[in-house]
Length: 182
Image (tube, rainbow, N blue to C red; front, side, top):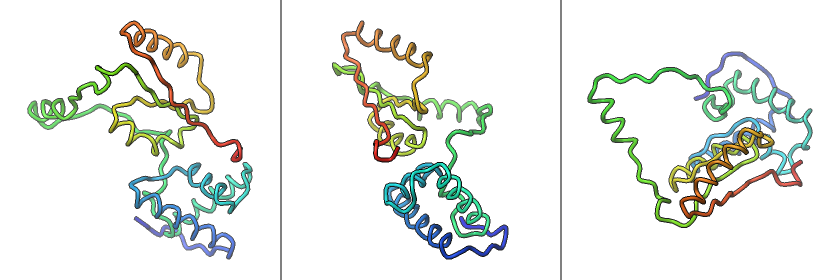
């Protein structure tokens, strides 16, 4: 959904970045993914379009913001997974809440397996990339947000102890930023 809220002229360099952004966005949308601004930035860095510097991230963010306001980038193509609106759930009838329970019912796919996998990712930016496959495989996932807090580590230790008491081996798949991108 591209909506023009302001008229803006872009330099040829900025127009090229907007065109590249739309190409990257299209690639990901074709696969069923949306992107955060940081994910888009890392795609620019990985493709050697811009340098991996905070100033370049801020510059790209400013161009993308202006391009969205100018109706050149789809508003739904870039998401913010760190700021969520929260509120109470509502149902139209007792039958609809019961249907919601039925739709939410899941059998633990790992109950009879010798392992208890979890996926840990370094950055929130990757949540949209892994959430679909983790949901499909019934594997919990967790964003370390740069580093794992002591509270999160303690919680994990308690879970892993429970898994081991049940005769299962906990396995962590930890995905981090490639050192070349740091």
